[in-house]
Each structure stands twice: as C-alpha cells, then as structure tokens.
Image 1 (cartoon, rainbow, N blue to C red):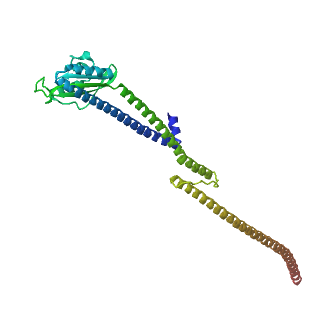
Image 2 (cartoon, rainbow, N blue to C red):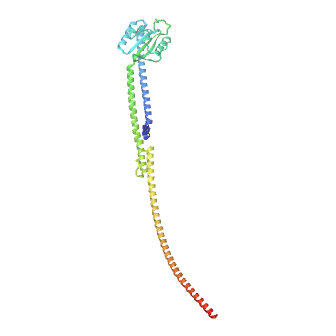
Image 3 (cartoon, helix red, strand yellow):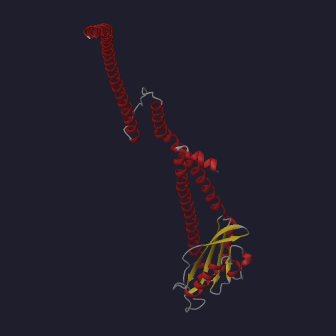
Length: 346
C-alpha cells in the first residue's frame, strides 16, 4: 500500500485520477440510482393505474347486476376474467370483509383478511369499511416468493343502489384488485441492469477520456517544460518549447522559453565581458612584464655602476694607504734626523 501511495505521489495524473474517480463513480452512481428509482416508480404507478382502471371497469360492469341481485352474471364475469387475464385476482367483499365474488371461486365466503399479506393493507381495509376512507396508495405484497400489487376501493352505498343492506352504511364493502408484478419487476430489473451497465461503461469511458485529456493537455506540456529545465540544468540552453495554445500551461511554456532566451543572452554577455577582461588583463600583464624587465635592466645597470664605483673606491683606498705609509716613513725619517741633530748639538 505504501508503494502504491508512493507511486501515486510521483505522478500528477495519478493524483488527479485518484481525486476525480470517486467523484465520477459517485455522480454516475447517483444517476443510476435516481434512474432506477424513477423507473421503478413509473412502473409501479403504471401498474397501480392499470389496477385502478380494472377496478373501475369491474365496478361499472357488475354494479347494475348487483343492484338487482343478479349474482350469476357477476360470477360469470369473474370466471371469464380469470380465464382471460392471468396473474389477476379480484375480490368483492361486504362490510364485514367476507368475500362475495372472486376470480378464484373457491375463495367465496371467506374473509378478505385471509388473503391480505400486507399488515398495512389490512389496517387500511378495516379503516375503509368503518369510515369510508379510501386507501391513498397501493400495497406491495409477496406471495410464494412472487411480487404483487394490491389496491382497495370502497363500494359506496349510492342512491341508485336498492339498499339491500339498509341506508345507514356509507360503505357496503370493497373491491380488491391484485396484479402480479413479476413481469414488471423483471422489466425493472432489466432496466436497472441496463442502467448499471451503461453507467459503468460511461464512467469507464469518462475516466479514460479524463486520463487522455489530462495526459495531452497537462502531463505532456509539463513534461516538455521539465525536459527543458533539465537541459538548462546541464547547461544546454538550445532547446525550446513549442507553444500551441493560450491557456495557463502555454503561458508557462512561453515564460520558460523567455527565461531560456534571457539566460542565453546573459551567458553571451558574461562570455563577452570575460573575454574583454581577459584581453585587458593580458595587456596589463604584458605592460607590467615590460616594465618589470625595464626596471630589472635599470637595476642591473645601476648595480654595474655601483660595482665600478666600489672598484674605484677600492683603488683609491689602496693609493691612500700607500701614501699614508709613505708619509709615515717620511715622518719616521724626519724624527730620526731630528734626534741625530740633537745629539750633535749636545
């Protein structure tokens, strides 16, 4: 895991993808979930609408027959309905909940509660029979592992009714229509699978597109900038980046080219200045060398003159010493002569 994080940390595109991928997955997941929910809701509403239409049609078809007590026609209608429409269950029950007519004839005489698999639906039926409160929505039921949708509608004690059960009751009973929704659920599942597949493929393609665009628009230009920077670090200022756009990276590339050009000009100026300094130093060195040679020659000549003077002085010193010796001899002779004269005079 540390190696993976380290590898991600070395690449800018990997960092961007790590940030964007969860967002892309989340967005597509929300879109898929919303789509699935909407599709399921639409299918459920359509099934409920069809069940209500069926209930209305049944109620309209059997009302007159029930009003005059012609129950046989109603039973025949239910038998034909059971034969022609599979997956449909219809129950007509009285104010006690006892079933009077049903598409499955063996259920007649039994209470509707025995065939109600949803507790909320059973409460809604009791409330409907007691207070004429029509259930506001359909109920989902699962029977033998298969899904069903049930609706309940009250049978009102209308003025056109013969009031076989008296006039005090507002509700004479109810109609229960149960529709098998397995095909609808399978269709919803198929749509859900299609949505998941399309969303997954879309997320994958979008991720690939983001990666390609990032590599082309960001990673490749930045790599060119890094290559030029590496060449500059090694002293090679001949490379230049081709600027094609006007975005931020293009501006950065143009600035890098400008920096490269300025460095070339600066190095050229430094080289020129160094050459001038070198030439000036060489001239000054030549002048100093010439002056030093001249001074050395003058010093040599001076030393020669000094040597000659010293030689002359040495000769003079010898001559002076000889003269002094001569004078001393003359003085000694004079002294001896004086001493001789003194002796004669005595």
